Image 1 (tube, rainbow over the protein chains, first blue to last red):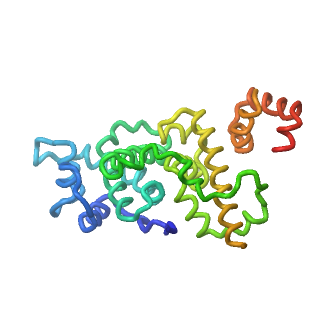
Image 2: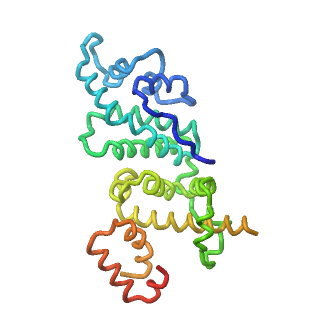
Amino acid sequence: MVNEPADYGDISFAAFVAKAQGEMTREVSHESAIFFCGNKTAQDAVRIINGSKSQNAPLVEEQDKLARFEQSIMPHMNAAYNLARWLSSNDSDARDIVQEAYLRAFKFFSGFRGGDSRSWLLRIVSNAFYDWLKHNRREEIGKPFEDVLEHAADPSTTPDASLLEKADNELLHQTISELPLEFREILVLRELEGFSYKEISAIASVPLGTVMSRLARAREHLRTLLVGRLERGKK
Amino acid sequence: MSCEETKTLLHAYLDGELDVVRSVEFEKHLKGCPACSRAH
């Protein structure tokens, strides 16, 4: 599987909701269902999410919230999608996760006190993913990583740096996608999204020391797997 | 600092993510440990 770039370029929240209506692929929570069904505009969605009693209120505050949301959170949809795609290894699952994450992000947006909006959003994506995982692929949680190394190279052989350079993009992506979940998450946040260790710690909800050791191990595993594949390809 | 620890810290060190105290410890260990300085 090669991850294609996400196609959510410059999209408004309302347009995203409209797009989501046509794309919902599985059962969603009751709230999401209300949110994504029918000809609701984003303002209607705001009213539903906030549980506003009044149908006729001018909704100035809510429109202001929507404007701020569009400005600070919407531009990170590609990053959100890419993370969800790397974590779930599946296109339509990733879309569902992103939709759920954006719904939550919007709901809790008033709790966002400035700072880096991208890492704030990706933390929600990560949480949404793990909730999704619990319901859909429980067996993947805590899968031991030794499984992955079954067919890997003999670790005693010296990795050949020139071999690594030959690893093309497709092989690299394929190999990353086969890493255990917790390594994949940290690796993607670091190497593809360029977050600092501290930011990763906040997004993935793990201590800083864990980020350090997971990233080191993720890179070692990636290298071992790649070398194994390239060695086999050579023979 | 143990040799096992330096394996993990190497990545953080190269990423520029180690604080000053640990960076110094890391460098000190590397200088004093032939096995690690060869491996890294």
